[in-house]
Image (cartoon, rainbow, N blue to C red; front, side, top):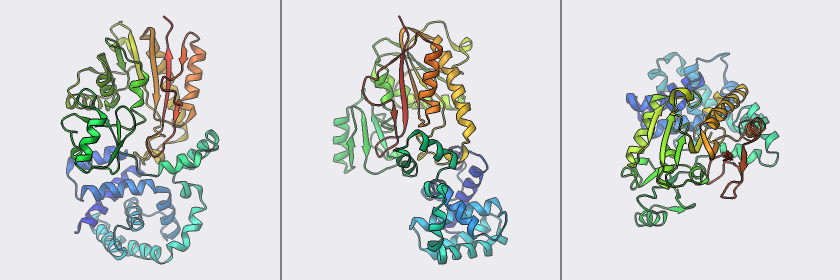
Length: 422
């Protein structure tokens, strides 16, 4: 079986499980660990590309299929194959042939005729059907209808730009380890190697073209880390001082914890509810030769982990819908439900209340989400400030808006800085 057939076979299996509710990140991790068939780059491209255009490929199969309910695995194969055809990376006849071969590998030999016929119909008439499909907002914007409606209401002038950004390839941004080098020196190093890049601030460097982390100069040695430029805003907004006792309440995968330790000589406690993700924090800190107390704990359960000594600074990078980073995780927008936003907001409220108790008088808490939904951002802060009149929301030191929207240089984030009276 050729490499494309192998890639389609593996990608279809992964996408079918994602469609059934599994996380794309978890499935790709399993793929990497188990050494499943298919060239890695092609499998990743097929999975991400298919899920970015999920609404379109779904609608196409529905419109062309004579089967009332196609086999889920065959349907996922068709989705991946339609993306492969649209990508222009392969000759049309090659894609169709390899999809038919993939039916055998997927133990769906009986579907070969159906797959062949549907794909050839698409090649003959797809361009004629495309305008009709694009009339559906879900197909046009590649997001669920409820998601589109919420963004239209919250951002009347920007909702289209936000949706378009969610369908693009994300920028690859690096964070320079200030304890080891500087942005200027590292940019010069990249330039000498012929790698195009530009600085976005004190520590952020945007690469012109993405590349695997292991190929990035100095990555293995801890000179740089992968971190979105928007996410890098957090450490600076905390207004860190030498000797501060700092809590990163939801630390995985450890990027913001590391940035805090690179930025100031502080004592950091990093909490993470999931043991496997806490181990990831520890690995990232070891690569950068940084030290913190990493604990497996739920930040809301203060009786189990807090020693009674308050923190001068708290980073509350709370779990959320991840609506500001969907281009990095295209499965999220299809797996989320409108009710999830309410559930996330309720959890965020509980976390803020718990963390406020462990914040020192005169201390500052930075509330962060990677969401663009106001229900998880401004509305959570408004409710908290109404419940805790003593809390004071501060202007952000960098003068930028609290809500960053996804764009060419950064993902979408929300930041709010709250001070506890002394």
